[in-house]
Image (cartoon, rainbow, N blue to C red):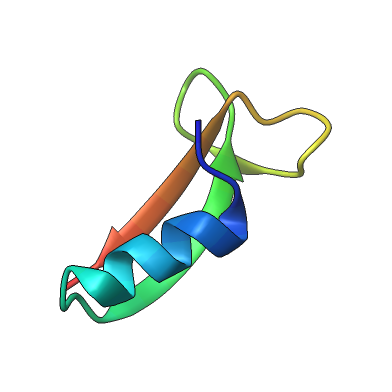
Length: 44
């Protein structure tokens, strides 16, 4: 599993432009770290 820091580093190493990182619930809605089940990364 990745944390925010390692996920952003990975996107940079892959040459991707990181747009957003957020936690999401099981339905894919943005939420906070306490209620999130997934760490979502949006990159180009």
